[in-house]
Length: 150
Image 1 (tube, helix red, strand yellow):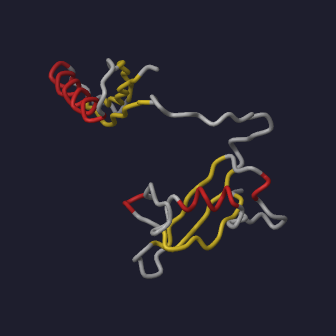
Image 2 (tube, helix red, strand yellow):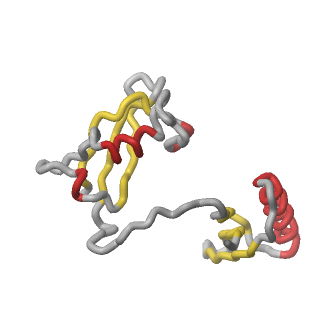
């Protein structure tokens, strides 16, 4: 599989463009990071454009789940909210684009106890599987509600 460094570039008139380059194979993630930083330094030395975003696409070893998108709709989504761990009543939200109708009840609420929903949301729960953060490095103490978006 190919691996890419994707740069978003800004000019003096507020316009953006992008540049994508393909990485050569490396074994360690750290080597990709070093190579990306080196490339950006060299690029900045020859271009007036400002690098405003850099992303690495490294999909080796990832197994994409096989799903059939028939009947799905990007306009359908839901927002789930929960209390931030250590946030003393502060709430945070997580949007689920294209949520399956199976996980929405008759009142438009997300069924938080449905095993697939619970497994996904547990990725953000402090003390749960917690492999990811919401914005600002936040973890969730508990999820409290979810609603279908309008």
